[in-house]
Image (cartoon, rainbow, N blue to C red; front, side, top):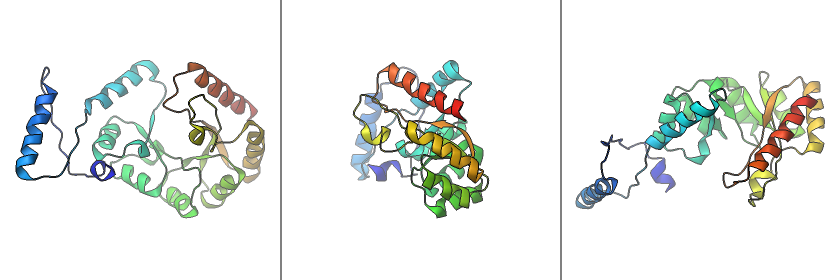
Length: 222
């Protein structure tokens, strides 16, 4: 599947309202069968535009940053870039990918929890200044290799979805946050905000309330 979504050879069709999508897919299947082409998949790119519109209508004051590793299909990234969405990238490859689409460096966040020095230097070279950090070790790497870095403190959160990997494996605990903030002052690294992760499977609003409360506490500490 990854080979399919990374393939830049795709086409987009605009369907008239009321068109039967099943018929469109059947016709395309028949065409591919006759020509011996490879497997394919169909996606509704219009849903991306609709979701973005919903976001703008509800929380227009908050800029969304799309995590590239969720789905790096070229068509998806192109649409999001055209809509002015920011991007959260976990590698040099992802940063380069979205910059090729014309995304400016200030609209990119480098979010890898364990950054390679070479990739921190790359981010500095191309002007990607905002990045996440959850430990003193990462903070020192950033300080040594990216003089213009602006850091989002990645905090640990808990939810009841069982996503232990996403929530507690990475992120600074309450106990460690103060130490990291003190180190940032000593290293002259600017902390500009807080980042946390809540699983997309989480349906409990109180998990978000708790995470936002923790984030607010850390901002107050600064």
